Structures are given as structure tokens and as C-alpha cells.
Amino acid sequence: MSPGTRVRPAAWAAAAVLVLFPAAAACSDSGGGSEKSPSPTATAPAESPSADRPADPAAAKAQIEKNWTTFFDPKASTDAKVKVLENGDTLRPLLAAFGNDKNAAQSSAKVTDVTFSSATQAAVTYDLLVGGNPALPGAKGTAVLQDQTWKVSVKTLCALVQLSGNAAAPGC
Image (tube, rainbow, N blue to C red; front, side, top):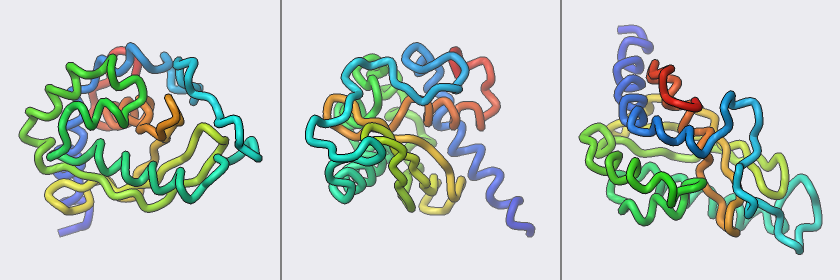
């Protein structure tokens, strides 16, 4: 009973949930090398006093945690998930399919750390849970400020899709 024995099936289940996101590539970069969003609305608030963090880091962190939890909440509606995913309107059909997946009904996420790299981007450390148990503890992702809302980045989804072994997912 090594720790990897139990985590591996859970990790595969979590990654399998995210296999439904291959079209996310339509809105992401082609190689994952750039962190920039294709959206022209991902700009810093005018009142931001620093280029390396938002004007109110505590409020931004709270919004990131809330939105990350919403995105991975199996009970959240597709509309709620669209609002917290970078370029979510474009990915609405995928989010609807994601909501109907039996594995998705067991998955959730808990944010454990947020570090701002700019006024519009943050590194997010989170635990991806399946059935309440950590499947991918300490996972890394990014949040981006788009339309004045901190959102789960499409790049984060592509990283999870890649973990599933689905290298053929376009753009990931």
C-alpha cells in the first residue's frame, strides 16, 4: 500500500474529468510558453499602485479562491463556470458536457496558495480532490484578470488535460 498506489487512480479520475476540455486550445497559446491571455480585456485596473500585484491583493486572493472553488464545484451551473473561466463564453459547450460527466460529480478543488506575478496574473497552488480525497495535491495553475474578474486560466486546463495523457488535445 504505497502512497502512489492510491493516488494514481484518483489522479487518473481527476484528469479524465478534464479530458472533456480539448477545445480549450482554441483560446490558449499553442505551446504553453506564454502566460498571456489572447483577450484584450486582461488589463490592470487603473488604480493599481504596483505592476507586480493588484491594487487590493487580499480582495483579489479571496476572489481567486472563490472562483477556483466555483469552477471545480460539481454543483455549480454551467453559467457560473463560464463566468470564472478565461474565455468562458467560447467554452460554454465544453463546460456543459463537463457538468454531465460522472467523474466531474466527484471532483473539487481547494486553493492553498496564491502568489501574484503581476496586477493581472497569479500563480495558484491547489489540491484537486476526487471524492474529497486529494488526487493531485499541490497542483499548480494560473489565474488571470479578465473583464475585471479573476478567472481560472485556460492554460491551467490544458496542463490538466496533458496529465491525462491526451496529448492530442488541440493547442495543449
